[in-house]
Image 1 (cartoon, rainbow, N blue to C red):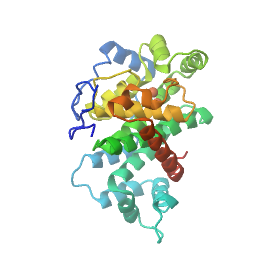
Image 2: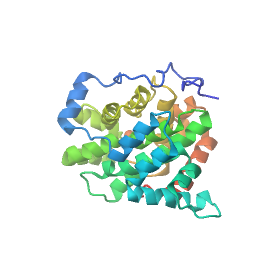
Image 3: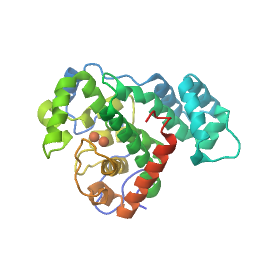
Image 4: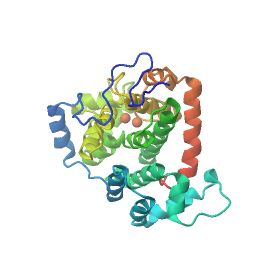
Length: 308
Ligand SMILES: [Fe+2]
Ligand SMILES: [Fe+2]
């Protein structure tokens, strides 16, 4: 076991984490950076409506399947895709599932909440940019990272696996926002990274005075996510953080997902298991490979749900 019941890392080498659910401004974003982010991006995006309603339900102890069904029914595409997913091969059942309430029970209450938030966030990643192969790839990376965060949570005993899913989903939302706000300038930054052995976060910092993790953290904070989520997103490109288990889970997932594809972040050529996050979570290469396999399998099944 590498995570204690409060979400703290207890494996060797882990530094003292912030407790989960603590709301605070991430320590590594200062007031000047916040000002710079706002001057570059303008108004930060609002929570997509279905995601907002879902998040409200996530925070309610008395939420029922019927509450969930009502929110999902407000988006017919989402409703159809939840049913399709419940009926997919992965969840092989003899009878066809035609009621949303049944699909929610089959897939799991919290998992359906995450799926709905992910589905309704898709537009956020597409806004202001042509949805070409690169953008599709970024969205695919976010979904892969979300799934990887959930899988790693299960492996290491981190109880808030759906919080981890959402953290993985949103960790790079700052890139989409920057693409929309300053397409030419941000395009040049990405071009530099393509041509030089430097990380995206490093080149962003040099050119903008902040990186996409900072933008994502600010968005997560304005959407009222816990301090733990905000911190994890803000620091996902730091070599080692003082964050809790969620920071390590996100950083390990990012490493694993960049090992699976040709991501633009240049997180290193080494295997994910060599990274600080995998070490902090005691994930060896075999465990990382298993996570990779699981993510590949689930992405195939849930491809339509996330418009991949
Ligand atoms: Fe990133
Ligand atoms: Fe990433």
